Amino acid sequence: MTSAPAVRSLPTADLSPAERDRLRAFLDTAYDGRFDEESWAHALGGLHVLATVDGELAGHAAVVQRQLVAGPHTVRTGFVEAVATAAALRRRGVGTAVMTEVERLVTGGHELGALSASEDGRGLYAARGWLPWAGPLAAFTPDGVVPTSTGAVFVLPTPATPSGLDTTARLVCDWRRGELW
Image (cartoon, rainbow, N blue to C red; front, side):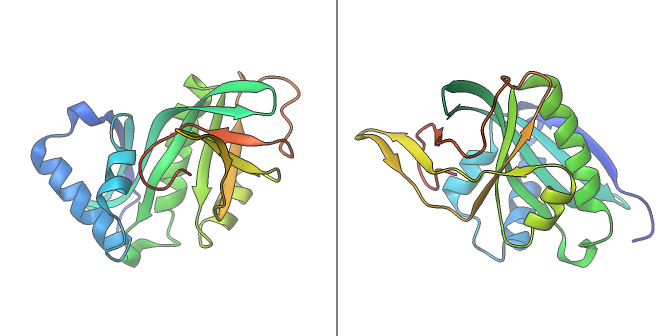
């Protein structure tokens, strides 16, 4: 990496068609072809954090609004989607730069931050103060609330987080197509 990552954030509506196409291709590559249409849809409609290095897209994350129920609290949540760093630039500060902006957006506008962490990402999130959710996970579905299973959900308390948030309580997400978490 010849220069530090430059980071900007913008809503999906401000991405040009060409920028959307480049972003989608970047995510397809970063996820080794496992970034499907539903994953793409989950990343749209919120704010995108884009990191570039020497003018090339190097990292991304999207913050989208979701409603989660954490124990007795319904919380307006900045849910983080489509976190990716270019393979050649991993472990070089791009992910840290992206997450610094993500956390600014989450703590400035939501009651809670949340994300579903890959095995590779868990260490980064824990080191940055995200808390692993230890309680059971569930989802509101057309058939009612049903238990879900996922790798690992992490949360980031914000100044607006309800007092007494218990990370061992049940955490319920809203319904959507594809992966729920």
